[in-house]
Image (cartoon, helix red, strand yellow):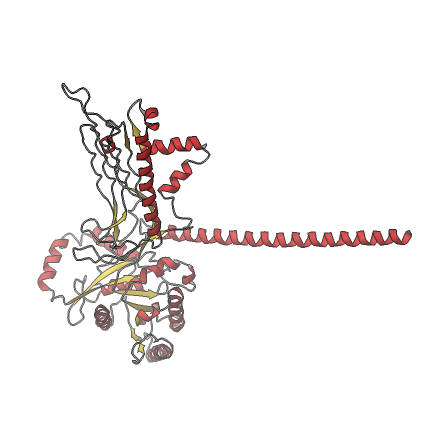
Length: 562
């Protein structure tokens, strides 16, 4: 008996220990999972905070540049049909005379030259509603189309599926409004949204065979529209608006059989307006000579679009912050582009595009003067203010007078191209660090890329390696567009005698060897010799050695446009 009790106690003790171990293991796993969830929440919150801070920085100093936007688009609702009967003298009981409702307004998207940002576009866009039908067979007015004007270079994508940014479509919105209703209430609500009844004839209409038959036809038409929309979602809308709309614009392939055909002055159709309702004359039959019901207008198409602006520039400048890209752009355009120039990093927060005009010899046309010196923006502003106070500009030529005098003395322009000054690129920009994707998105469409490095820095080779790797990480093959390396700020070297000059030459030689050995275009075609990057030392501040750069950029653009 004692042995049995002892063994029972030992079994209970072992069982208790096993239970405690199991509970402790479960609690440890739960704590581990909670810790992982907490870390994930912290990472998401940090990423969101960094994104908000980046966008806030880019909007400073009155800048309103915006290159990505989520837009909810709704086509206009169709006008309601009318229930009416003709009345005139000596005709007390005339025939049905209700007019049809007008079609809801379509929504188009139009690439517009001259626009440079998406900031003017509303986040919710709705087409106009069609006019309601009236008596005496007067149909409602069809609504005018709504046009979304976007910059040339905008990429439009429709959000579908489980994307959390997608808004409800017309059927999902209706289904949400019918929740928590009884079956009879649901039927009454559905009919209320679809039918217009003659005053006092609602109950009589619901019991008529003619109304029930018309209701079946209406539901069948709605089902066909829903199936068509479901088929279109298998190939979501995707438009690359890389050129303005002209009469010769080709259709853009889409889920529709005819594609998205451009209409001059309107653009591309993105959301159709709802069809107008029909008046009571449409329901006349041999059994029902005076129908007292009509249909309401259909809801317009609803969809959510992602707009992404990719700057269209022939040449894109890529470099570290404070490498002198803004100064270089001002020098290449003869001082006509007023970019922000300062001695701190991330002076440029948004892309700036300048137009370069040159003659056959590579001279910049429209320059502010010979031997242009580009100084910091604040210094130039203070200098201009002092000249104003001294009255030195009292007899200065006006803008129109300057333009007329320049046109009389300038040589003929033979070539023109655009150069984009992009925000500074840092390590891990492909992971959205710094300005991240906001910067990298703006250089994808450039015909050629130019690396700009600080030649006065300790290691321009390291800058080049990081720039190339970040471009490749963000989009494989993007670094193959690079054609030139500009070693800027060369004026800071070689100013202290022969020893310093020799040191600068040795530094340039090391940079060229690095480019020759590592910066090779591996994407050369047809077994040709790999294309190597050109290297040119310049001083953008003092406009030195720019003619060689301009002639090379002209050659790159001509080759890319062919």
